[in-house]
Image (cartoon, rainbow, N blue to C red; front, side, top):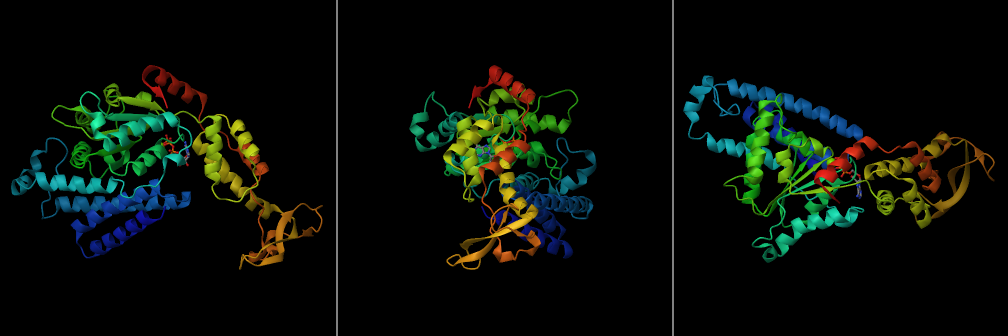
Length: 440
Ligand SMILES: Nc1ncnc2c1ncn2[C@@H]1O[C@H](COP(=O)(O)OP(=O)(O)OP(=O)(O)O)[C@@H](O)[C@H]1O
Ligand SMILES: [Mg+2]
């Protein structure tokens, strides 16, 4: 995966500041908003280091602040802009709406479509079914709901209808989001709308229920399509007395759109993911007709995850070692295993840092891999034959031969990295499965 989205975001922001300087505030506002959406997308779908993510987030806050200021400025400025407060629209902006009453509908819809088009997954993430270890049941259900109806429409006529709503739930880090990305990749003739709850309740748009409405109408226009809502619990928690008016409106809109009178939602699949399914509103839960439990991986799936996480990194692990790791990592999630492996990958670096002795070894030269040289240095114990007392600062940059990742490294990381999912959470998820779900 490349940094395309990030690049695009930076371009947009550069343009935004230019327009801002030229006092084209309306244009600048739009560009800032687009840029932020791209940044958020980049954080979510493109591998970034934690520090990079942190700094992108900081920047986003700045841009949003500026956008907010521009928005208030434009709202108060001489040129009236139809930004209606959600719902009724109060008396004091009557004069404004008089001027623009007939245009009001259209720019509004455009505005939301514009905002949404940025939340939609633009580039397919390129994750195949095979990149997801285990979870065969879930994969089958998704194929049944997504691939087959498009490929063989005649199979799904009359009473046999494809699923309209699928909920993936399970402990954190078990691959729910990952699986949805695989769906996006594999269902390449459906339009994939990926929205996070956060972008639907975004602070500068305010009128979230209209966003929900626009989202669904766009999906219907472009069917077959899939709407993926990650962390759906943030949007559709159970309705209660003390929640905010806007949260309630979002939920209601959701219920109407997912299965409302007069809404023909053929060809639109809503895919949701959550790790706290029990907070979902019961009416929303019903609209997710199929609820698939994505459990912690089995031993064989864990073996697959160790291999996937290691990728092409040089290592000295045998097939037996992998099996052993699979056995030892009971109750680790996919994400946990990913971290164990990443930590193990760092062990060779640590060995270099802490070594007090190095010895000379043969190996391919750094500058020209075809040439074999004799004077590479690798960390060793003080008693090893040929050990020279020195530390890493004395090793020249192109003379270092780092040790490959070994089973010992893996075991060491495994013992220091504990699994993140606790029994309480699992218990709750299992109870939910007994009541409402099915195994993935
Ligand atoms: N079944 C799997 N196969 C391969 N990799 C996996 C699998 N499950 C998890 N992973 C790894 O763990 C990472 C995190 O997974 P993902 O983001 O899908 O978790 P999640 O279930 O959405 O968690 P959360 O509920 O916290 O959002 C993935 O990027 C992937 O590298
Ligand atoms: Mg997720």
